[in-house]
Length: 182
Ligand SMILES: [Ca+2]
Image (tube, rainbow, N blue to C red; front, side):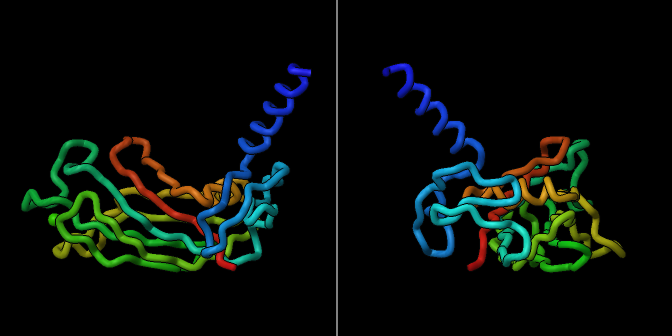
């Protein structure tokens, strides 16, 4: 009897670990965790598994951090000031959002909310740029990419938690918040 109950507990934990986290953070509607493991193409919302593609989402650019110098140790700007950063969001070839430039700030918070609709086999990019007034083009610091269905599903299933990702150098960090819009 005890052994059977222990098995049930383990099974429930595995289901929750499969992606059905509590979803009390959402469109102002507290909800219960899903009682079953949602399919990879779904996420848990108010106790029910819902499809990821074909619905409206928002992706919030929460913040970015680049470190005081470039990953190779050189200064960001010729005047030795901190970088002047902006972030762009592109979904399936459409330029969706561009933040303002955060001047002389290696760890700016943005909060820009971008409406997004994910597609099967979609491509989603968030690019961090360093803006130099004297240069013809902005310098791409890093491109964070989610390409293909599995990557898009993983991105959406970060809901309701914030999603923090790093570039390969570990110096550039990005935090997003992905939320379904009902
Ligand atoms: Ca600067």
